[in-house]
Each structure stands twice: as structure tokens, then as C-alpha cells.
Image (cartoon, rainbow, N blue to C red; front, side, top):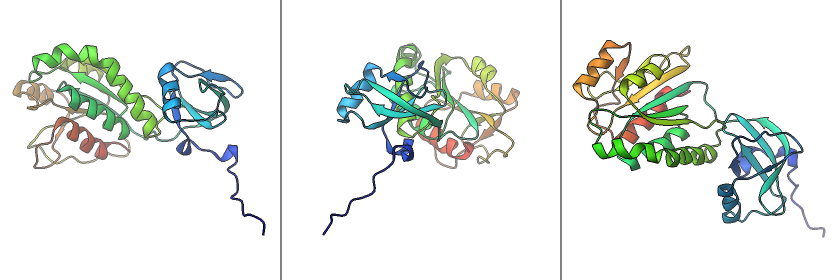
Length: 247
């Protein structure tokens, strides 16, 4: 009796959901071109025990996705085709995040990227602890790496902005559309209309916004909202709010 063979997957049927993705910024993608992987990504090739000839995907963080195969040394990918990426939301939401404990900021950037945030600005506020003011700038490279890993993991194609620390006035000047401001005791968050595609989300640090900062918001055209009767930690508030705002 002849042995039954499963049908082979054609190379053109491979999608980004089925293959490992590697972040390669500042490299053009075109069919027939071999794109070298950064050292950090070649380490991932080895850790995943990927073999030469296996399909792999490349992301440049600007919306481009290339699909190809790994070379013999696992240090580059031969591009076979460039396809339309998936995973980017229709709306663009920038998160302005009160400077807080580093682990909470990291968690917020990771999960916020997965939830579809277009970027993160770390904002130094009155209730930000002094040590966080001083350490945030040095931690920006790590936060950007976290965003890049989350982009790959959730199959997005655009790398979120990660910048800071900035002041509240600077944040308001950068905020697109009508800012949404999370504050306990305000009315519950109502999803924006379908016409609103560029949004800003402000989340305070531990202890929330100070009375003076809330006064600044009152003087601006903002929507102050709450996420319910419970007091949420910074990172939880980011995820909960993005689940309402991102489409």
C-alpha cells in the first residue's frame, strides 16, 4: 500500500502568521535581494534552531513586510516577495504615559504595542518620583527594544514611537486630535466616533495627575474619563483604555 503523503505547503502560500519575523530597520526590501540580519536577530535564529532554507519574514518597522528564506549561515534572508502587512489598526492612538516605576512603563509599552498603540511619550509630571525623572532617558533604548519585540510578536508592521521624557506642555502640543485623559471619578469612557482616527491618550503616574495638572487639562479641549469604579495601575489603565479607543 502506498504511503499517504501530506500535501506540501507551497512557498507562495506561506504567510507572516506562520513564520518567524525579524526586525531589520533601514534596509530596503525587494525580491531577489539578500538582507543581512542584525546581530540581535541572528541570535534569535540560533535560539529558535532555524535551518537554512526555512521561510522567514522581515519587518522594517515602517509598514513593509518581506517574505523569503534563511541563508546557509542564518545571517541573512533572501527576499522572495514583499507583501501587504497585517496587524495595523485603522485608528492611530498616541499614548502619553506618566513617568512611573520602570517595570510598569515597560509593561505598558509591551502590552500597549500589542493593543495597537501608535506610539508612547513618557511624560514627567508632578507626582513622578525623582528617581524616575533621572533614569527614564537612559532607559529609552530598552523601551524601544521592548516595542520592537512586541511588534514582531503580535505581527504588526509599524514600530511604535517611543520618546521622552517630556513635559506636560510639550505633550499637549504633540497630542493629535482630541486628547482623552484618564482620571478616577470622571464619566465612563465612551468610544470615539468612526470619524476620529487620530487620538491621544493621557495616563498619569502612580498617584494620578495633580490638581494643577487637571486644571491644565480643563483649560484645554480634552475628554476626561474613567475606566470604572476601581483604581487601576498605570499599565492596566493603558491596556483597558486602548481596548476602547483602538479600531
